[in-house]
Length: 134
Ligand SMILES: [Fe+2]
Ligand SMILES: [Fe+2]
Image (cartoon, rainbow, N blue to C red; front, side, top):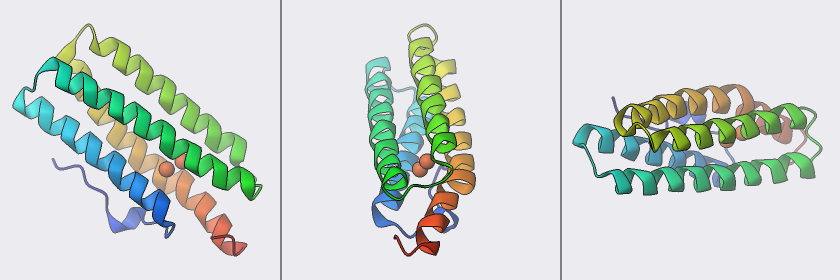
């Protein structure tokens, strides 16, 4: 199963689309690492990249949302926060069980990304566009 960004996740805001593509790319690399039985420290490094990239991306979106007083800002931010918490928990669990945790991270991220982009991000982008803000 290839994990790829698709045009249906297109928000029309370049920086956000690029960051989403980057996140999909990292998750797909993680998936490949599992299949190829990559070394533990390589997977750990990529997990660190995934966390850093997610944090950066959420900060970008949150800047947009707060700048333009997006009404669902608190709800959206709490989804970001809970995703980071889950990712940190998965990362901690990875120390104990390498293979199964990597699989979980990959599965979790794909589900989360697809759901969050479709239900959350496209909502705030629609808001920005409706107000001629993006
Ligand atoms: Fe978001
Ligand atoms: Fe996003």
